[in-house]
Amino acid sequence: MMSLIQLVYVSRLVGDESVLRSIHSHAVRNNTVHTITGKLLYTNGRFLQLLEGEPKQVHSTFAHIKQDARHSDVTLLLEQTISERAYTHWNMDFKHLSDAELEQLSAYKVYFQDNFSAFKVQPYIALEILRYCV
Figure: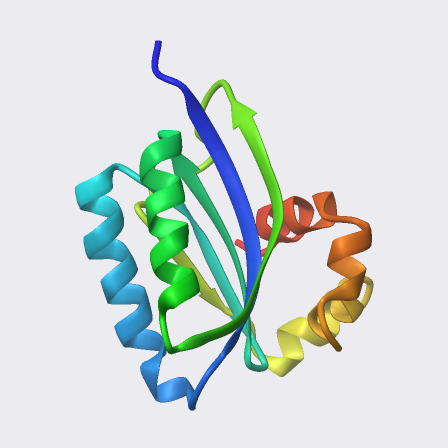
């Protein structure tokens, strides 16, 4: 049985939202080649992403993200071994949360503010947010 991990991080968008489509399409291409699945959530200049797959592939992808000029303040929140993928049908699901949708998630708004310090205190909240935002 192959070993699988989940890696969750947050980052900030560098530039304007016009690059979101490019970021998503690049993720889809890259993740398909490397058998990585996951979810990318974006709101108000901030990303929350979960990557899952074989450790070598996930770590390589995360290293590329940390070097990507379109991301800043890349912060690892959580890395864990998993027995099965949570996102089996998505090489990279993408959700752009509008301000109105973020207002509906009032309990989670604090996690997308400041320097992501709330996530650092409670990293497992990131998994809850990603599951909730379909």
